Image 1 (tube, rainbow, N blue to C red):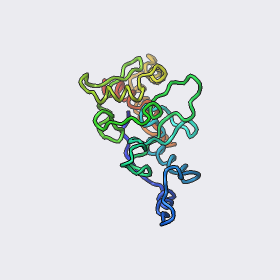
Image 2: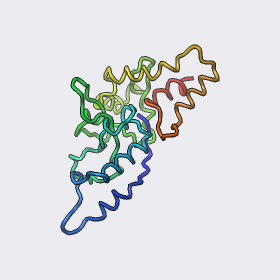
Image 3: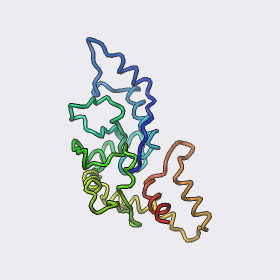
Image 4: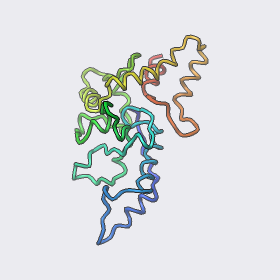
Length: 209
């Protein structure tokens, strides 16, 4: 889970919400069309086009707007951009395991769910060479529960993380080539994208070297 710094730039969304009047109050169900696309694009962009939870590559068709604190919590305004993220998975293919926002659903516990909006979130987790994620501290119940409730250790994600790790294990890379490879991967590319499973690569090849 990579820390996300919110950087709201949604003029159409702001204008749409400001158009509220005595006869109409905007709701999340009303959000549609280009205004909703603008919100989703802004979320994807500020996340470097990786899922807010598992860090898979985000695509427009394969992602959805996620409310960190669920919309079912009536205390919160569902149009609060600071509570919005972009999670992978949209329409699930048959047999595809649920994880991230779709698995989390309406579950929320402020003490047990690690937030990607927390600058310290990355320190809650460690990664292994076979692609698994685990709590950095055995006593960290929030990390353990977050992994469970988001399905971050499902076989599919473990296999994808392992596949992301493998190119860095190429024995033909010189030391200089290796460090250039890693540092380049951890920078956003010209399209503003982070590499998939950013924290996995950072943990294994930067923090542990």
